[in-house]
Amino acid sequence: MKDVAHDTEPRVPVQARLTALIADEHHLVRGGLKLCLKAIEQNVTVLEAETIDSAVETFKTHPEIDLVLLDLSMAGSSDTTALERFTKSCPRACIVAISSVADMKTVQTVLAKGVRGFIPKLAGRTAFINALRLVLDGGIYIPPEAFAAPQASTAAATVATAAAPETPAVSRAEALRGARLTARQIDVLAQLLDGKPNKQICRELNLAMGTVKCHVGAILGALEVNSRAEAIAAANKRGWREWLTPSPAHSRHVA
Image (cartoon, rainbow, N blue to C red):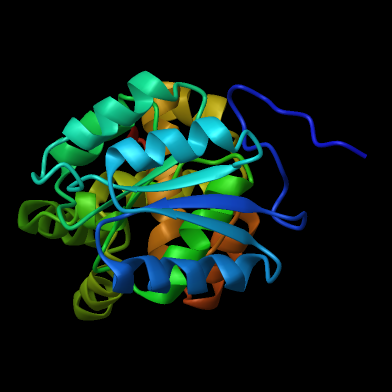
C-alpha cells in the first residue's frame, strides 16, 4: 500500500518506514540525530547534507523524504537565513528546526515560518526522541527552554502558591523548577487534568487556539511524554492534581 502525502501532516506514521534528511554542517551532530531517528524507527533511511544547497537538491531528488532536521546556523549565522532559503525552495517539507539558541523570540519567529518543531541542540536524547515522535504524530513541538525565563519561574511559583496555600510552598517550587513549567503552562495543565479539550481551554483562559496548542506542546516536552493522556498520568504520578486545580483567578491571567 502506498503512503498518501498530506500538505499539513507528516506523510507516514511513526510505526511505518521513515525517510529523513539531516541538514547540518557537523558530522558528529548528524550522527547523533541519526541515532535518535533509529530509536524511533530502526529501519529509517537517513539522507545527509552539509549545506543548504545540497539539502535543497537532496529533498527535490528524493520525494519520499518524510522529515527534515534542519540546523538553523548552516548559513554561517544564528538567524533564520538557512530556514528561509530551504522553505522557499521546498515549501512542502515537514521541517524540525535544530538550533543552539532557544529563546522565545527565536522560537516564535521560526514557528511562524511553518516548521513542525524546534529542538535545542542542548536537549537530551530522550527529549529529542519525544519531540520527533510528537511531530511525526502530527503535533508541533515547542521546547520548554523557550518558556524558562527567570521571571516566568518566579511567576509560576507564585501562582502555584496562590492555588493551594495548604501545600508546602517549598515542595511546589521545587516541582515547578524540575518540570520547567511557567505560570501559564500550569494554568493549561490544570485544565488538562480537568479533562477539558483545547476549545474549552481557549474559552476558560481567554487564549487563542494556537497559543493553547503551543502551551500543550511545551507541557508534553517538559514532562517528556507524547500525549495529553500521558501528561495527565505523569502529573498524577507526581502528586500535582491536589494543587493544580483550575480557579476563577487563573482564568483572569493574560498569556
